[in-house]
View (cartoon, rainbow, N blue to C red):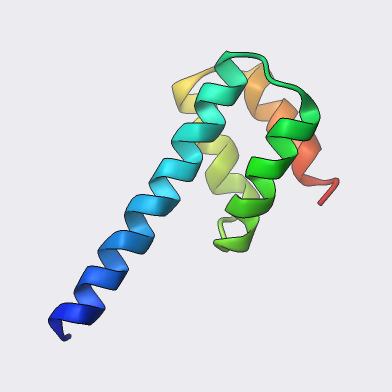
Length: 76
């Protein structure tokens, strides 16, 4: 793997982790469904499975937040 490829992979991974962290912060601040949906669209574009995302939310926050995300992801 070349240095450029490794650099791009690291950047994509960091950005993906940042998106999930932004989602967690938005949920903590009880942002609107529309705001959460915008983040979920970006997360979905990165090909994250709903199960992975809700698992992270459940681990970082709680079951209610994970269920909210699950419900909103169904709207996408």
